[in-house]
Image (cartoon, rainbow, N blue to C red; front, side, top):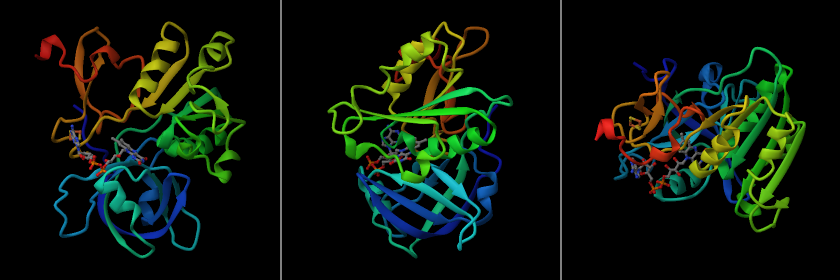
Length: 282
Ligand SMILES: Cc1cc2nc3c(=O)[nH]c(=O)nc-3n(C[C@H](O)[C@H](O)[C@H](O)COP(=O)(O)OP(=O)(O)OC[C@H]3O[C@@H](n4cnc5c(N)ncnc54)[C@H](O)[C@@H]3O)c2cc1C
Ligand code: FES
């Protein structure tokens, strides 16, 4: 039985900086020593709205990067889209504000022991955890290409310093306002057919993750995806985040994406049943 990330702790942390980057906010938090146990793919659950807010549920945000260097000790970077009430509140927090956070939560991307050819695919703010992942893969001798996609250029998050950790960075927008016109999944079949990729790491909207799983089905390419299912508690209690996953014996079980994920094997997720209740469970 899975349980909450054993390194998770709840703490009050300070906002070091909050910068607008395109349609996102890059928020850096002074989190101290927990950076030593945060891995690419983990997320943070943040209490939003302050002490008197009616918003009870914490909001989940991928840990984009962590750093031990700098004048503030351990720092954690989040990339936040101002979407609804909670994320807009977080984006309004200025330097010096205090935030109540639980981290690190969830599973992490698996890092290969041997150098591999890795393709990192991010949709929208899904690129957030991929830059930290790229740095780790590069340090293990992997070739790292990154393809980012979004509906329009303002929704691409591709910081200058992050570009240094990848061999090739390609950008795809559906309206053609940045990079190449089209969907980020379009070039993948060609790369897979030419044998240019060993592992795909992805993070972004569920239809994108599903499309990648379908492209690599029946090939040797491993697909690790960070799923983004709505989460109410973020710590394994409420069961709102369950996803159908096939086990080794072919049976389907509902896994909690906050503790069994968010990183999952794309080949194990039963994409047809996402959002439905499998018969055995009905
Ligand atoms: C693992 C993970 C990583 C994420 N990473 C990022 C990131 O890096 N950057 C980013 O901008 N966003 C990220 N998100 C999305 C982010 O959590 C949501 O955009 C945010 O929660 C929206 O909150 P809101 O108050 O702005 O929106 P609202 O729509 O006002 O509230 C949404 C919140 O309501 C609750 N809720 C609503 N419906 C349900 C439901 N059916 N079941 C359970 N709870 C529900 C949840 O707590 C949800 O977070 C991530 C989500 C997940 C699950
Ligand atoms: S969000 Fe509550 S169990 Fe996963």
